[in-house]
Length: 93
Ligand SMILES: [Zn+2]
Image 1: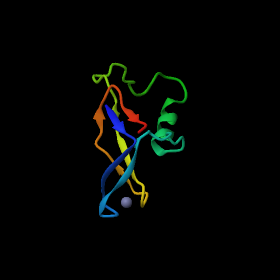
Image 2 (image 1 turned 90 degrees about the vertical axis):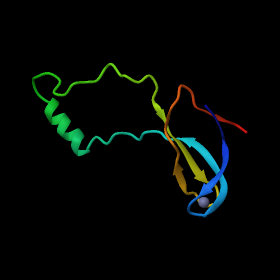
Image 3 (image 1 turned 45 degrees about the horizontal axis):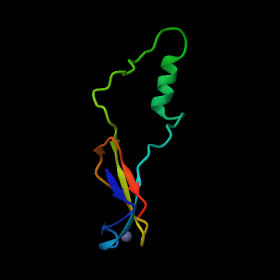
Image 4 (image 1 turned 60 degrees about the vertical axis):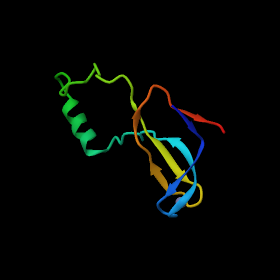
């Protein structure tokens, strides 16, 4: 899918159509001190095998791509509709 770098869409904060900058949502880094991660590390420590199954064969081929729209005027970021795409291009126009 080809997406323009700047798009004119409605901003709910400005309550009018304004130019928006398009970018792609990227997952943040996992926190090593999160409760689930600490619990998992405790479970994995010591002797014994992998306590939880690791999923290897995924049913889906493509990951979902989520576009982000940032309002140029107020900086409000809107999350777009996530889609399964092979390729997501932001055009330099
Ligand atoms: Zn705005």
